[in-house]
Picture 1 (cartoon, rainbow, N blue to C red):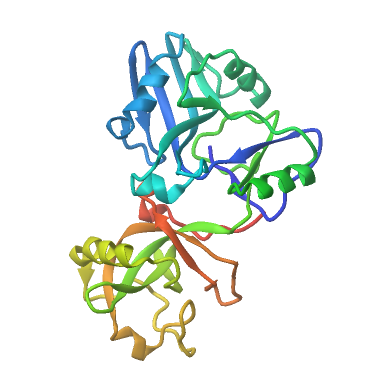
Picture 2 (cartoon, rainbow, N blue to C red):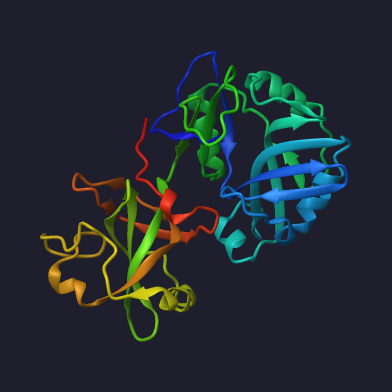
Length: 307
């Protein structure tokens, strides 16, 4: 079940609030002593996170399916998505916020309050933790989470069932730094390393450009990205809305003259991009590269709109 992006938290007694952890969404399936971890695109990632799998296996139940976020903790004790991606984490943690099945009983049609009660009966051991609801009013929760420096907040209706694969509006997420996944469709080559990335999103079967991003690319990352993207080169521009007729600068349009300077790639690689806002002509303003996202297929990347 996915959360709908929003600019502000909903309020009322039917809503409850949790930390939005900056990591990989992960399902853990326990069958006796055997545990399998699945990413958001249903890839088996158990071998990548053996400490998490061992801790889930130690939960004293015969079987369970739990949902949560796999988070890297950096040297300062804060969640770090980049540390997770580059395997530079000081520690890993798995924050569990939902239980879908327990000892053979399907709980997905039960309201969230019932699933949370069942989750509260499970005994976890580090590095597995329960992500509990946050106390207080929405405004005070926002202030506290911002002050700590976490990514955002997820609001959930306490009566909501678990709806796999849906953004029903019963779960709402507010990010303090707006982000979303975008597909890499091209790059500029500057002396053997990536200068900027051309990024976009799918609208039906059409890939639309959202402009360029240069900020956030470190020297090491520029070289790594070039090695990753070179095998995907193609002569054909994958974006249906390029070239752009407007003048070009970083994060804005791509003119016919710019097209000759870009190495086009098959749209297979997904990146998470931070930005301040979407412009009226559907480009990102003040875009910044955050990290690669290996847990989401490129074809599923759509422009996220706020509720």
